[in-house]
Length: 164
Image (tube, rainbow, N blue to C red):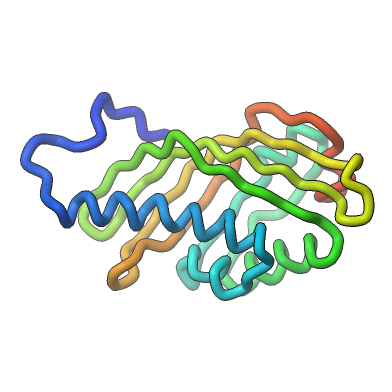
């Protein structure tokens, strides 16, 4: 679930521990900016090959029923195709908290995602979501193995952006 430790680092941590923490949050930055720029390679770099993305808790808030997306290619293809030429996005990642255990990590973050129809920016959805993310080490970087997105609040019309 969410990372709620009362400190960022325990005593005796090293530069390698700090590097891991930067790389862990960078996976979520790549997730957001990859969508915002419609950069397939950057977006895909956020995920492990067998990743799962669960947007169901967020979609449920506005009455949508969506499946869990499984596999890096399916996640990337689905999301980029849904937005291509139709939706402009910006993602802001804040409040990252993480727990590292060897080659596995958990991350909690708040992500504000603004989505606007390209043809009419008056049709939009501004979402503030909690991200619950499990990551794995991939050589010198970290990648998302599982991501659950829970909506805290929204304004606008998410169904116009994501479908009903």
